[in-house]
Image 1 (spheres, one colour):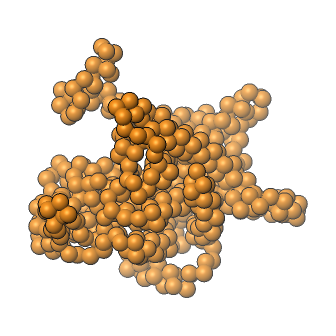
Image 2: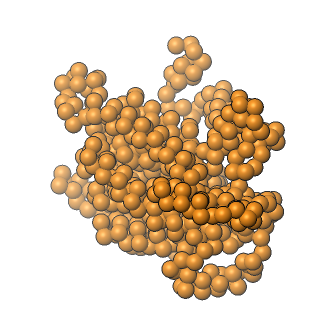
Image 3: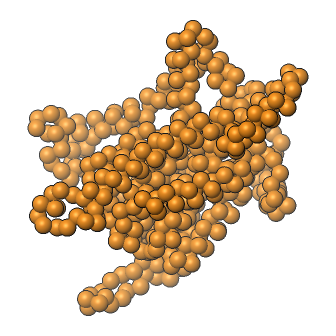
Length: 486
């Protein structure tokens, strides 16, 4: 329990400066790194023909976002189909089959990161770098750009200028994702994660058998996998393997990489809303001294903003409850194994790595599903029923910090819904951040909240109700349970 408390305490300390830094980037304010990054960004704008001063309304922003991602999908698909070329392919991996190529590129472009292949045998190093790692950067930057535009729309006066998508994409990539990935990747290499272009190594084990040890640019993929809350893995077994996650320190590096930017988005939101309130106060000729005095009374309000503090606290409470339940359930062990004489004094260690133990396994499990990353350092299908309930619940909620600003946007949807209901109960016109919430806003909010379970239930129903879906089941008894026959 002590190591869990220390892990969370360290996170709360480091997320604050990162949140302030991301806020300065989102708001276009000065940062210490501007002398370097301004030149890099300027060169990219010039080569790409981007006008950084040109704003976009929400429709143009959305079209630019979708169009850019569509081009990336096409390029990535082509690379997967021709990956058998000898370039960065020391293991002689063949071309990926067309339907699997389409599934893979769509998966990583949409940040789903579902893998129907094992990376060590299904992808060349060229594909690992130019498709998987690159898409992890682009999809993460796209998500953060959409979140920042969303915040500007809430905090701003008009929807006709929510920023410039291309500028946001470039700034988030060059000023956040790349430098953080370089530092984090070097830390993982320090801990023993491979970063090379060598072919796989065949070694003799102590039992006298042969074993293939995967090589390749693993560290580069691992860090953006977690930093961008992407998921997947260079190797099929993911971060449970010593190749991707060799030590407790590498485990903490990956944990904090997952947690940093989603928490920073909440701080960014709170500070941008506070800035807007100050501008409105100045425009209305109101004195700011009283407001400044109130802010000084509370460090959390000054640090997160009043709205940001509320959302961060709500997310944090849900996270802590989930972590506590998962940790407690796993420490109780598995009664079925205890009945056959296996000691459960260490807790339920089935599917877990001894080098991490129950505490860090529960922490990783709760974090990866709360921050919607999809990486694992233990096998979730071996969790106890109560322990396994937590990752399932947090994936369904998708508001416990979430990834790339998605959790923040979803939580704001629930806040708008709550404000609307409370406003009706007390007979006042509902407002959130100074904007009236009326019928149109509630229809859009309801659609955002309903679409998630609708898609899950609709496609699940199709899967268990069609012959093609039933053919893919590994448990033939499942349809009987779903239909209520058992």
